[in-house]
Length: 452
Image (cartoon, one colour):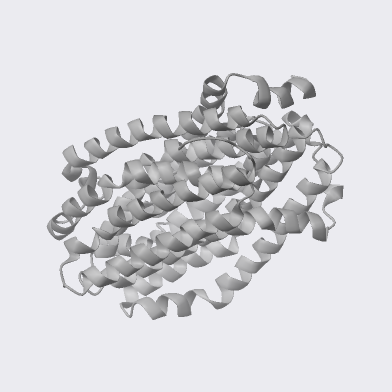
């Protein structure tokens, strides 16, 4: 494929065909990538429900790493796609180099966090020694090897920036498959390996991420010629870093808000039941599968909308958004029905005890109701990112944190754990409404005429 063809398909291919072509590989890849967390949880649950609780308490650290990586990656992706759409190719290599420099800085930061902050962080949440030890061991490994996750996300975003989502899928699948293979080997000590328990799950994850990042690097060097990948262009440039951060910081904060939410929810429900965090992580892992279509389309939309914004093709932006919303609304309704019908079998995948089932069945059903709105909100958030409306994207994350944690805390005052889960659908109603308002405002600013 020559450069002209690679660039023009984002601006000329029929929208439905383009979105399916770009998002289906991303959706499949993300579904498989979610197995990083899900497989860890499923295998760790075989150790004990307390081990699953420990994994839940580690969730904020995991999302902090992926959130920073997503911020750098999305910022670089959107900037590159807009440059390509406008036909401005002179700064491509420098944009990539500055994004890579930011990845290196973040990697060093997480090493410092892993050495100094992990034990105090978990000591604040629990004084149960076995859980504290498992949390510290798992999270320290993730932080010290955060460079693997950060590089993987960055290289995959470079592939997405030129529409090569089929190659992104190769990198994601490589990591996921290796993680699935290594998890039982390192957790339970198969084939003569020492049984490392929860630490084995962490080692399996970071090894898989290292190999996936190498795969992503190779694909960019040998297959992504449009971006002129060069390590010599990593000298920091304040203007380029500022442009990446303008888009990337709200995205990073948006993703890191998941860490805040996980930390807050765990500390709200833990006093009500020691297995409640295990219920929470099980529901979130299952929900992650449910929203992957929206996340995949949202990722594809960043490249498509940013490109067509640069090219001045507003109708293609509108068509992309409408198609994505309708598709995800249908998918969300189907998934919600599945959660309502097969609630108990889904929870039993996590080796749920009777106490966990008692809390988990109503929890999964209530949280499942919010999935259609969650998908729509994610699509609209991706649109805001592509339009360069980082502040609005950030505002959605703040609203999510405020209304979810505030509602959960108020409901927890009743002492009824079931009421706490109602904060999830109530928050999504508010967030979806705000997202619609923000997108309409952004359209007006860009002179895009549409009704949502």
